[in-house]
Each structure stands twice: as C-alpha cells, then as structure tokens.
Image 1 (cartoon, one colour):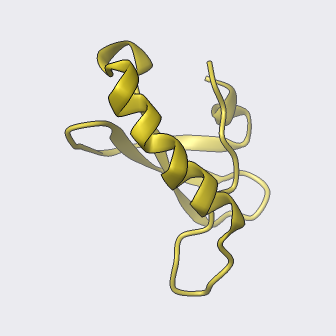
Image 2 (spheres, helix red, strand yellow; image 1 turned 45 degrees about the vertical axis):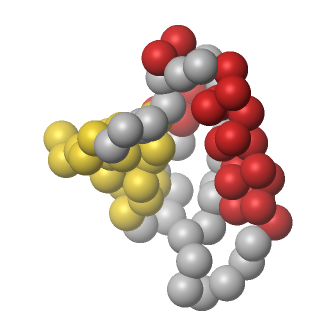
Length: 75
C-alpha cells in the first residue's frame, strides 16, 4: 500500500459496510491520521461511483472541524 510510505499503521481498526478505517501515525508530523481502505473488488460499479463525490468534496474542504483529506491512492 503506497500510503504506508507516509504513515506507520496501528493495530486499531474499525470495519464498516464499505471500508475499513485504520488509525495510523503520520511519519513527518507525528500526528494521528485515519486511513480509510476501500476494497474496490468488493464494490459494485454503481456503489463505487457513489463514493467519488465524497472524495471530491473532501479534497477541497478546509475547515478545522472536518477531517482533512491528505491523499488518495489507488493500488
């Protein structure tokens, strides 16, 4: 996973219907970051297409009370 070049993965994780979320530590800043892992093979094309607007919105949002999207990686 490319994202692991920038973070150290933790053993903590949560699993939802569409994805797993793992807690990690950003190597450069030392801050905790969530990593959302979506298995594309388990998603239908239409459900995957529904996620794209969320990703696009998260990329442009900049607010102190909203999680900042740092990077999107397709592996």
